[in-house]
Each structure stands twice: as structure tokens, then as C-alpha cells.
Image (spheres, helix red, strand yellow):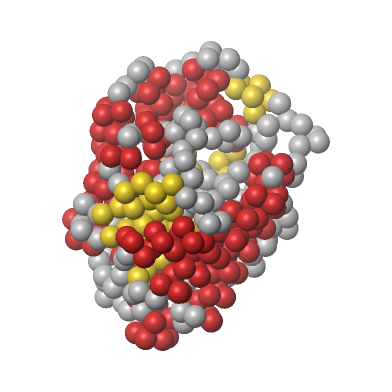
Length: 373
């Protein structure tokens, strides 16, 4: 399997038993509906969805086996693996907000680090052949100098704030389990292909999280209020949510043995982000959303006493481009347009069926897109 195509993905995932942790979250819900549309047998393991949520908007409970559970409950997680016997696991469940990590550091550490450790241990103890893609974040890198260059997979991991530290720790955890229990050179014996994936800041329809810029923008625009912007000059690798999800699916297909190269050669860390030129400031993102919405204003609400967040984050995606033949399909403007289109449909009162159809339409449009000029 080379480039990302619908037929190739369907040939891999149709009838395949797949576990998605965090399927009630924003990225997890998009991944669940994509896999469902490909014909996979999807089991989701996650906390109950917050409201509002894309999971509820799309009635995904009708599309997958929905298991409500906490990653910190290892017995429940082990029982889910034993009952549903997934052939591949996509691990997206996490406490995913930087600012929340300042308010709830122990919850963040337990959910992100201990939760991932529980999953890896359940995979080890279950001992069935499977692939696993552990999703972390662009914030896993030790971003001390906040360099303008794109971080490469071999750069040091770390993190100044609790959230970023937790993602760096998860990368170390995955590396340790791979070295100790699932060494790629011995894959034919243990038959567990383990990789991690680091994505940039995702945007897209159906994100309702607090303290994330696009949901904040949409709530303000819907209420006809000025958008409050905390960090207007911060640069982030913005990308539509389908970009990294396509990368995860492509990586998963190689871990499952589809492609010319051996699965063992893909048991590594991978970056999925936009082209460097599409790294934009928060100000640019907000203004693009307002322009796409058709009206609105914003005001600078920076707070000198706010918790630290990295000023610049960029990812180098050369490895995924050269070895997975993965590349961003939607540029910054296209990503914003697709995002705002979804929210405007929801704002106009689209039904669950209509929102599901719009998600599927956008997935097909993304897969069919060529390389941006």
C-alpha cells in the first residue's frame, strides 16, 4: 500500500476488528466514523462523552461497540481487549488540554501516563498478535529554545508544563515497552507492532472543548460576541483533523503488514503535521475563521499572568513523506473552510444524519484530494 486511497484503506480495514480509545472525544469520533465507513468492526473505549460532543452529534453509539471505561481501570481495559480481540488499537484517549493540566496535574499524569501504561500492559498480557498506534502530541518535544525549525522524531522529548511533560513521558514509555517487550527485530516471535504518532494542532467540525481556540471562536461568532484571544502571536502547526487521522490509518496499515516494507521497520515514532509554510499564528487562524464565517470581530485578551504555553511549535514531516508517502492534502485555507462549513451547518440546525453525511463527504473529499500546490 502506498498513497492514501479509499480502496487501499478499505482493503485493509474492512471487517478488521479495531479498538479506538477516546472515541467519545473530538479526534476519536472522527476516526470512529471514518473506520466505520471503511467497514471496520469498531469498538470504542472511553469516558462518557462531555456535552456537547461530536460523538453525540453523529450518534456514533449506533455505529460502534461503545464501552464506557476509564484507562485508569486496568481490569476493565483488559476485559475489553479480551472480549473484542482487536487486531489493531488506536490509542487517542487522554487529558488533552494544556491549561487544564495546570488545574488538574495529577489527573493529567494519571490519564496520560498511567492510562497508557495500563493499555500497553494489557496488550503485553493479552499476548495476541496486533498492531498499536499510540497517539501523543507535537508538544511532546523538549521545546526549551522554541526554535523556528520543525522538530524531527529523533529530537529530545520533554516538556515544561505538565501536559507537555506527560506526552513526552508517554513517548518514553512507548519506547521502553518496545525495547523491552516488543523489539521490532523480534516481531515474528511476539507479533506486536508498536508505533507512536505525534500530530500538530488539529481543527475541524465538532470540537466543543473548552480552552481551545476554534471552539472558542465558534461559540463567540454564534453568539455574535467578539472572540477573546489569549495568545495572538503564538505559532502552531494547524491542520485539519483528517490529516493526522489519515496518517494514523496509513501507519496502521503498514504495521498490519500491508505494503512492500516489513512491518517491523515502521515500529517507530512518526510526525504528522502541515507544511512548514502553513504554520500560522493564532491571530491568522482567528481572522481566517471570521472571514470564512462571514462576520465577527476579535479582541486581544492576553494575560501576563497566564500559565506558560510554548510560543512556537513546528513539526518536520519529511520522514512520513519519504517512508509512508503521506503528505498534507488540505492547506491552511482549505482546512479553515472545511471546519467553518461544518460549524455553520450545525449552527443552522442540521440533523445528526445531515452532520454525519457532511463528515463522510469531507472524509471522501480529503482522501480524493491531491497534493496542495
